[in-house]
Image (tube, rainbow, N blue to C red; front, side, top):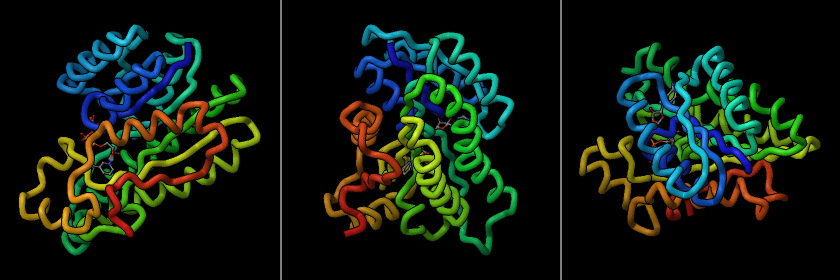
Length: 246
Ligand code: NAD
């Protein structure tokens, strides 16, 4: 049985990806941020994954911290025996126009959104190399492709993920490891629920399909990218935005 490790999988897009990959037949390692509320939600996600007849366990780690990631990767390997798919999904926002953005808010977003992807790929790639196969999907954003006012920290982190994805695709292609990114647009999750109605309406004006995306519509593309159907796809960024950029 193949195993998928999904970071930040206690809610939103990550939880949805975990359940979709469980439905596809992967055993699931549900990473959650080390807080009681995240743990509680992760337990529920793992239970929903098990309903598909696969194994699922929760793993606490702040993925911005290398030592946490190291402990988690070892623990996932010991529990399941392999790590066949890695989805780097954990992310935060701390939005403000640059003039008002605090340095610590810049650093925090880079640490969680960008450094975590380095931490996880650095630790999981050797495992995948030994297995002689592996699939990595990094969750970027349209903010990383086009920029977004108020998100100089977030768009920097998400643009970096695209560069890292292409680099790792080139470094590890000969080891039969693929590395791709998805760039979601406006998706209905707790992260976007907090936006004002006015801002939500304004954003939708730019979307060809004139609606928010659902987390399931991200999960289905991730499902493809970690499947054998995507065996010759690597170093790519798939925008899932309802036609934001045309
Ligand atoms: P969300 O806030 O619902 O979920 C983010 C998850 O990451 C949470 O479970 C949170 O606990 C976890 N997390 C945060 N910091 C962590 C850390 N240090 N260690 C471990 N876990 C941590 O947001 P979402 O909308 O589901 O976002 C998921 C991913 O999709 C993020 O990377 C986000 O940037 C990206 N994204 C979202 C949208 C959108 O419209 N919602 C658009 C583009 C990209």
